[in-house]
Structure formats: structure tokens, C-alpha cells
Length: 41
Image (cartoon, rainbow, N blue to C red; front, side, top):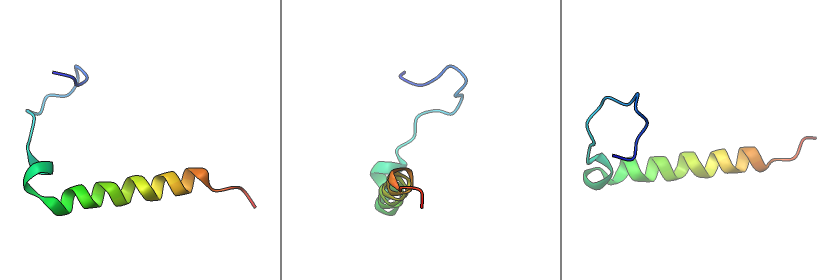
């Protein structure tokens, strides 16, 4: 199925049905990448 063996939830379709959820994930990933790329002061 393409997921770890400890995942017991059935596959969902939220990313296809809720456009805001996809935008939220994109924002989260962008913020994480910027945070990881930051240089220490």
C-alpha cells in the first residue's frame, strides 16, 4: 500500500476534496524548509 506497517487508517481522499488542506500542507512545508535553511546568528 506504500505506507509503514504501523499505519492502520484506511487511505483517505482529503487532499482531493479539501483544497485548503493542501494549501496548509504547502505552507507548513515551506515554513519548515525556511526554518531548516536558516543560518545561526
